[in-house]
Amino acid sequence: QVQLVQSGGGLVQAGGSMRLSCAASGRALRINTVDWYRQAPGKQRELVAGISSDGTTTYGDSVKGRFTVSADDAQKTVYLLMNSLKPEDTAVYYCNVEMWVEAGMTWNGWGQGTQVTVSS
Image 1 (cartoon, rainbow, N blue to C red):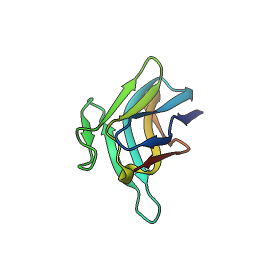
Image 2: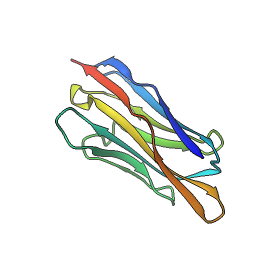
Image 3: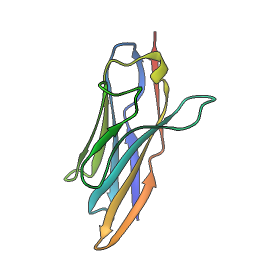
């Protein structure tokens, strides 16, 4: 059994920075893929950033140059560093992580979500 627990988030002023974390516990060997999504009130869930199995990072157009996604296999933790935050970044942020749990077997799960509010 693997669990993902998110931390970080809260209230920040426009132009500020914030780092979100998503830590895996349990039968997790190493990270395979990472995606960070966000959902603002009344809007569809949006893919913000991701890391593919070969380590390639991708970003949504609205966050390119401001957000950085990373992963630490030793800590089984993934991060989303958000700089130059804007009020339109306000949303609930979710991590989606695929972990290797044993040879040839992966597990995919979601964090519980964390609110990020950017004030103008």
